[in-house]
Image: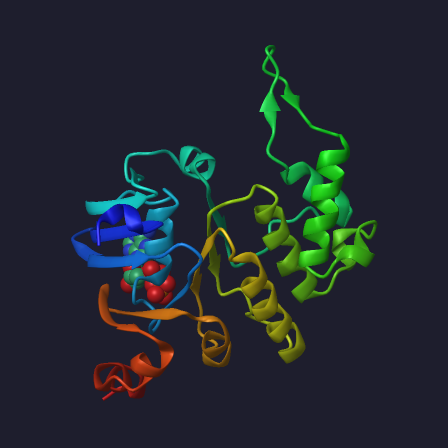
Length: 247
Ligand code: ADP
């Protein structure tokens, strides 16, 4: 299929750190409305791939096209503007603000002619905040200060802070790390709810969670794609079994 059929087309992506190829000729394609999970042992290059897509790290070679647009030359903020949202492992929420306020400050801002930040404070913003709060299971916590949320609720709030910017590609780094089983199940529900009109790219170690959410899995090993396909296919791939069992 032509590249434009994909929301994200990563081709021959490579980055070297002091001559060491942390990501080495990686290609993969993410469809619209797809949940793609990247798995692989520590040091496989998973985080670096997300860093490259969001512009935090510059590629040495290859291309990253998002909706047909080349991202490798864009700044981190231009990539956010283009519609790519990234959640890191540690929540970056404001503890002393309420859930509502955390969502409100994340609403896309315009700049006035004088350069001051302008906030939209109308019914549209409030409706959107309530809608998102419902999606992230925090509609009854809107006036609670973020510091009093559970670990899982903080992770959801941060996903909400990204959703309010309406990204078409959402990247999450180990979203269920440290969560209870109940929270993990709700997170799977949450991801399945939000993919209409967007795709999610997730790094994950929790294989139960991967089974629950992944449409397709890409396995990285030593900076390269080792295997790709449905979880069923990938977990029965002898190459994957060998890497995970450490032969
Ligand atoms: P993963 O997320 O799969 O655990 P990473 O992408 O974090 O793997 O790292 C892949 C490899 O690249 C590792 O060997 C790591 O030490 C190396 N690496 C990552 N970032 C840098 C950097 N900024 N400088 C040097 N080496 C790095």
